[in-house]
Image (cartoon, rainbow over all chains, first blue to last red; front, side, top):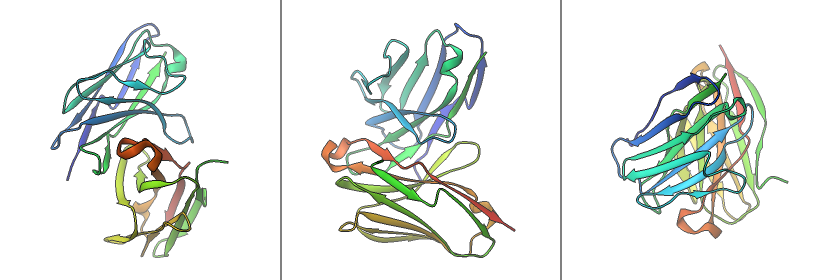
Length: 115
Length: 112
């Protein structure tokens, strides 16, 4: 079946550095990709929605200059956390869907820890 | 009040038991998803349904559109079924690209 690959699965870095997370759809073309953030014991919170070739749509309260999203191809989207701070530490999950009536598939997530 | 409510929040069962997790929602939807989140965080999509009933192995999902309610059933539960099960609905107001609205999840622990 369809698979979404997210990389890296875990990253630990120092405050002030930038971190890039990749999300790839492996056997389908993802017209839409979603980035979520999940706090401990909380439900997934949508950060932004991106359609291939256009700018991402960010949810209210999400800083677009802080969380840069690029959806350059139908199989790849990236989330870059710029100048990361400890409060950015969280679990980030990407998701992708191929078309309007297609199911949404999820990556395995990236656990980000900022020291 | 959350738009998607799940019950129970936590569930402990003995291996072999029949398990039911419930999901109620308050918005018009175009589809409902049942997701399984493993302890490591990875999420697997179990079902997407908009009416009736679907079955996959030991898992059964039902939805009643009129009552705005869905259930996920696990027959002959096994310790490997231990995970967080999340109900998510796609609002019909957002069109076909409408965002998913997530429940808070049900943490299931199946004891051997």
